Amino acid sequence: MRFSLRPSEDSFYEFFSRAAQNLVRGAELLNELVQPDADVQSVSERLVEAEHDNDEITHELYNRINSTFVTPFDREDIYRLGSNLDDVMDHMEAVGNLVYLYGLSELPALPREMVDLIEVLNQQAAVTAEAMPRLKSMKNLREYWIEINRLENDGDRAYRMLLVRLFSGEYDALTVLKLKEVADELEAAADAFEHVANTVETIAVKES
Image (cartoon, rainbow, N blue to C red; front, side, top):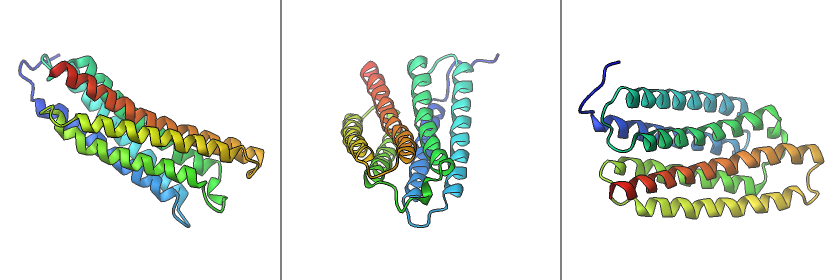
């Protein structure tokens, strides 16, 4: 295998930025689910495409790591960051898939608290995409992981209120089970964004 002695550091940061921008795309697609008369099948299919794109970005990143002798920072952290970004998209794709397969679009509307969770993901995606280019300089990142943590807490509150609503008797038992599985994926996506931020914080501390 051919190894580079002096890697182009920009290429690694480009992978992270591309993956983060793809998460913005995924969050925007989730937002379509809460719109009146949403084409849920189309949203689900486009989320699958976005998930495949993220897989390809991650695969390219891993190939670059394995063919580079000197990396801009710890290669285990590069692997972890790439994997964490990919995890977010996996959960987003699962949300669209479940809403479509379970026929939840037949409900008059998704629970308001579920809409709140999707809004949290939209904000987390935007903040993450804005922060990724700053990895190269390792400057002005602290406010990023603080904001992601704040948003994740907002997501936790929305999730707990959603559980209260689901078990209030408003929905039949089968619908509760379906909505709970979607809610779990939304919460997992919010948590995965925090894992990305925690990894960035770890990298920044090591490089400081």
